[in-house]
Amino acid sequence: MFYSHRKIVIQALFMTAWIVQANCLVVCADDLASEQSSKALSEKQLGDREFSPLRDGKWIGQGISYGPYREGESPGGLLPTSEEITEDLKLISKRWNLIRIYGSNEVAEDVLKIIHEKNLPVRVMLGAWISCETASETLSAGDAQSATRSNQEEVAQSVRLANAYPEEVIAVSVGNETQVYWSGHRTDPELLIRYIRAVREGTSVPVTTADDFNFWNKPESKAVAAEVDFIVTHVHAMWAGLLPSTAMQWTEEIYDQVCAYHPKKMVVIGEAGWATQVHNEGEQAKLIKGEASEAAQQLYYQRFTDWAEKEKICTFFFEAFDESWKGGPHPDEVEKHWGLFNINRTPKAAMSNLD
Image (cartoon, rainbow, N blue to C red):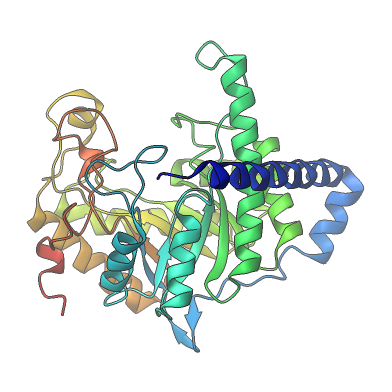
């Protein structure tokens, strides 16, 4: 995006204000960390916010993960235009009324503003992206400080947007895959909890965090689970080495396992999908055994959505569109090919009957 000098100054002033607000939120979260405050928070607030994926009284629980970046676009780089996002949301709303986005900065407000102004029948689980703040051999002190500022801005922005768009935002997810052992941005659970509490303090919507099932089925997940209104788990049969013929049985078993481990919490599937292409080198070549094709994706999508609809399980299929900025440089990199639509927005086989 290009800005005039005056717009840059105004933007800087607003950013400064939000950083101050973020710092205030984190200070409040630190205060809540005491045992007495934790007990009061648990007794007064936790469990009071029910996550209900409804619109006008109608269940809209079959959602989709949405990344808006097209060819040549990426987070921190060239961003999608309002026209592109509008085109996406109109296409999405033909099939889904619930979307998940992963951050609150950059294009998040554009997404919410377009839904609001165009009166689109779409509700949003807003994200607040959280990165590791602990300096280490792989993370310099300067980068750790930068991550802290970024995290605080994400938290402040998620609070602002949830309050500014109360009809559109039905939940906030603080952090994505920050706790599972293989995460590339693994975060101290105490830090994550402070941010979760800050968002709950500043909003009235249900608040959660999203992570892989390999975190939610472990004892260390109990402390984080106690802080959220509902659980968002990722269940990727393809990454677990399953074949299309056995993928749904495994998906159901893993979902039931997480539910049994957290019986007092609603469990939402935040990611489950099937890629249409995979590279023949690297970790993906070792782990992925199932066929990567449009036919395999179509089969899994049909079985998954039939099950979720029958059981009334809220889900976010992963994902709406291919995103070429993800993963490594090779065009066959699996992370680029999870979309139900190609990056140019043409439908793959699973969406071939979309009116």
